Length: 340
Image (cartoon, rainbow, N blue to C red; front, side):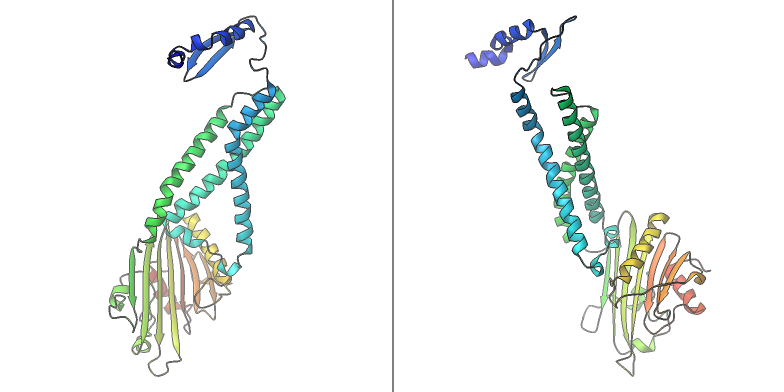
């Protein structure tokens, strides 16, 4: 009963304590949720309300340990991530897939946000600790500290949303997926079906006779907030000489804005030069005279990397020179690009 009475009327429970504070020059302003707000009496220089410095610092560390612990963990995790990234062979580095899935973009944004607030939290905590030591008392956290706390709450909320989305995304198919091979009964990647999409096919390059005996076609389409991406591959065998084959590929990135397209162009050039391509490394050379804003070629013109406006494309066909006027016109037409 006495405990309940004390809870209902804290003035009765802490009467002696309030009297000591008043004698020391402190005036009680308000009680809220178990917290007491004091102010100094006009014209007085009150004694410190907490006289046990050791107890005060213990309370400070107890309150800030979770934030400092989180900051240390994030710093160590980020350092390990950098070490692991540097340990991965360059041939396995690829950044463009991040643009192709909304979940990848959200994950990337979450890590950036978490890293930003982790570093900011460390800086704010260090500044706050320095300020408290200099004043020889626990100072009131500033506005920036409150913003950081709100940001950490936002980051945690985003993580709670992100975790289930990652599992759901595993089972989500591409926006379009067509497949055809001699080993499949249900062949969806027919010539007619694939020609409805902006990819370069064997038939477009006059290789119809070569694909009469055997073939394989694969076409996927993915969309995200930043990019629409077509990935097409085709393997065409010569009718009379099976060892003579044509390997065709089209990667088409339709980016949301031109600066992003420039970044994709540079990234894809760097990735393929380091071996991130099904048919081996591509050693690009600049080809400024092909009529595109940016363009590279390699393997005697069999592979072409280009950028026109917001569209980036990697087109290849082994054994065929794509840089002839006729083939360049075919490439522009099939990719939906304006003619030079």
